[in-house]
Image (cartoon, rainbow over all chains, first blue to last red; front, side, top):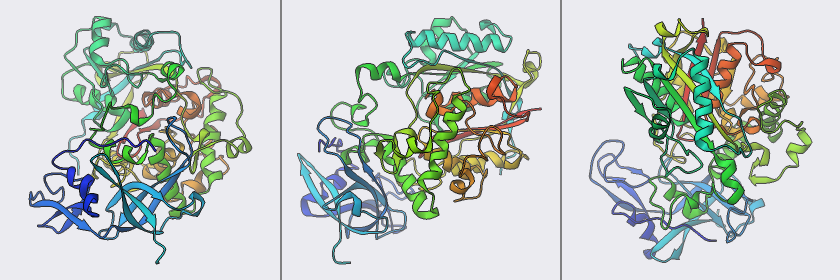
Length: 134
Length: 396
């Protein structure tokens, strides 16, 4: 893989570096008690600025996925799985990520997944694996 | 919900389109002036009558192939004197130029707005096959507000996101690949009778089903085809449009709403922003989906057409797969002809304004061999994911 890395900002740094401590950090509003993503300085639901990163379980389900077959650049190993993960903490709270460790033909919507991290430079990319314990 | 609906005072008075090349030997600006001068003449106007220019997205990325010409360059090249002009990527998708231009007329800034869209992705791909890959959009680290959440996961094209909507649609509603295929097959059948279309050879279900998987469940033929082209639409004050050679096509209602985050993953996965735009559009008119005689629905990827069919109420939610099965309903002689010029899947990725151009061509009865039965109401809709805009067009 030749992952493009994100530029880190005051708002996004927690998400991309939480993996250093094994944590998936999602922004949370202390007033309306809701998570939101992507992170920002203010709660998009209630407008409160009492927001900040909060560790979630890292568990979720596959809301949808695709198996990418196209070789978009020479460094890319295909096929690979891109998925939207719905985190178990909140309905509709989703991340785009990759599923690793499972053959593309075995991926299904609704499967339970668990986060793991891949460190590249100063970024900890949150990837997901299908849980074997459920 | 809305008590000032001023787009009804705006009409389409003329249309123009350059050659659709794959690639074209003409410069981006030559394609643009070809389309624009054709549209101005079609409206019975001269360039001195044009007092506004609108474009989506305009020259927003250093004149790249996605949008090599913006309003600034066109105004200078044609020597226009305008009261208002504007472009820019951020808005309700590829119809944003029409929507903004209509607002400029409704607000009294302009009498006649030239709306255009030029694209030269075919020429670009002659030298760089990965030109449209998302990881090439920024140099170094991804600073985009939205792509940075996708490119680290090797989401290299919008097809990866569109494919996930398609997978979800199949999961929730039982939509089948053979049903989705009908978008591509219908577009190809229509392109065969459009002399300006890019792909005009027959396409069979077998060829579709055996075509290369790009990002499951979307195949090669679910992707629109790059081209070099420019499209232009003239918007006029309704009272002035009456003096022109064409029967005015009224902008009956606009849908431009976004009531969800600007995101590909935090929005409704089977409705996208299309549900917001469509709801707004129908709230601004007494017409109903059953009045629509031709529907030109965004097919940057085939799944988007399916989602627009449902979002616009042209079929019940979740029923688009069944609605298009076999292709009869959406054929030129069916109850709801769609993408009658071949869409972007076979006609060419003119990217947005091609749908408006074709809606008008059909309303005016100018479509030649591909002309459908006479009708008065058309819908044009464009965009996928968080981009969505729609127009209800009426020829009285």
